[in-house]
Length: 285
Length: 355
Image (cartoon, rainbow over all chains, first blue to last red; front, side):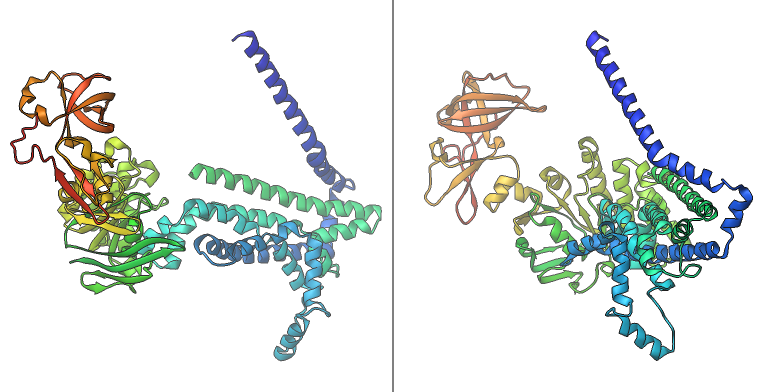
């Protein structure tokens, strides 16, 4: 190795460590420290207080609402995501690009606007309000959408809408039609082709999408905030945290950190699950 | 005719992929659809399979109009260019798939699959996945999978394109043998004339969505009916001013001529054995000498025409710049209607021993 190489090697090393230092400091200050401070703050009043603040009526109700909204929206979006990506990768039709762009709306629109949009649609002044009223009077039901659980679920579905289809579409595009055509030529029908041929290809992408969707649904604040006003009934965990923090007393602030730590733990679980899925998917390839 | 296409037309947007295509194929034959890329050969194959719908025209298989019969019910085996093996299934499951769809009893499936695995020489590989196989092995699986449900017609889309040159020649002989052994009517698409000539009983030459010629390989090679076929099959170069060559005269209406290397004989100027033919031979200057492995390719300037000739390696060496004697046996002259063979009028009828 001559002098020039040595010098270049050294400067490359300097660059490498400099980049590592910058990244570590940035991630530490911006991401890790705040999360640690959440945990630390949540335990400030002791472990007993921690569990007590997690078991209040408001918090258990919020946890229930969050889990329900997450499960329903993951379910709905899984179904929709598969259908949409099947449609967008396997069929040619007019307006295909427009549809593909529309799916991405939740990525670019602020969640608060989504919440307000639902109020303007299903609220007392919304255009769909007479439809809801008609259904209620005809079937004797009492369905409320805005400021009720259906609204919370709708808002969560809205913000997590594109996650699954966006994971599946690239995979379906790379895989191509050939295997499906081959199966069809042998007489296999749609559902069998999907189950035996297509699904094994998209399995990991789908699971990855489900995980991302779950993470997003658990943490959603803006859209739900616009549609949910009753603490202890329609509040989700993020809203409950906000309410606790805003009430201002020292105890309730510590309690809000305790509830936050619940979301942090859920997030870490999701993160680990994500890594396992990524690893397994890579190994299978 | 076992397979028959009548006046098939197919557009993709403005692109005409099939232009009034008609042809018939006898039962048990192995037929090549040969043409350059974009000539419509794959489209014809896909329409036969039912993967594309013709805009107009009729397709008959075994005397039955199949236009409205879906792909899955036509009883056709199809081998895809990329094989399209099911990546998440073993070799056994791949071959068994078509039988499972048909709800064949388990025991029968097992027998049939094992029989096919033996036939294609993949015994012991039943449990492997496609990505654990070589290109040639994958093709064998694709072939076995297509045959498993006992189709009456086998279609193969560029079956050798994804295989490296060395294995290809071996595999195509294997496939041709297999197809004849099974006795199934087969059509394969290729852009490689060697492949078509080597393997097929009959060749259908396609160009710009049209059928140019349909016949036995030898017939297509020796008697091309259209300028396109004359140019596409074999190697040849086009000459407008062919009348300058001894033994040929320019005729009216003829637009030009194609000369293949094998029509051109080159002699060293001191070769005494050609004495009787010397007066028919033209003088030429060697412009280029290229080693082709099994022969030497010469480019010779004869009265302004750049002729290409092949010379066997055993003969005396010829150098660039050398003056040589050149004899052209025949050429393909073409007008607006078609192609005709013109023999060298000086040596026609005489005993021409190839020297």
